[in-house]
Length: 74
Image (cartoon, rainbow, N blue to C red; front, side, top):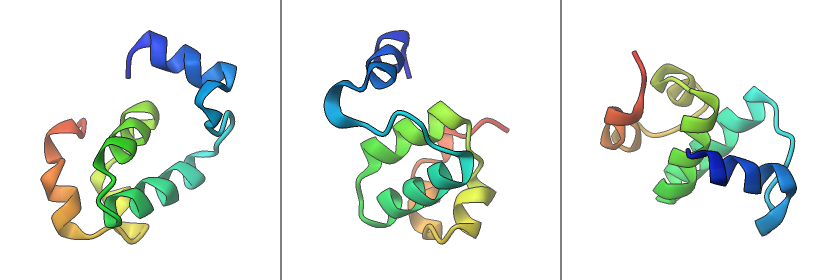
């Protein structure tokens, strides 16, 4: 995520959650992946640097995680 989007989220514009724990981020990303909201999931994953293992443990489907496997840092 770029600097501009990070600043927008910090300001609270777009009615985004301004403070989120890592566990909440994992849960939200898993929900977004299961509901096919890939853009929102990718934003959360890149912001927090989540791993595929964390998402799979949180309940994300294997197919959804493998569909975005190129954004994970190994």
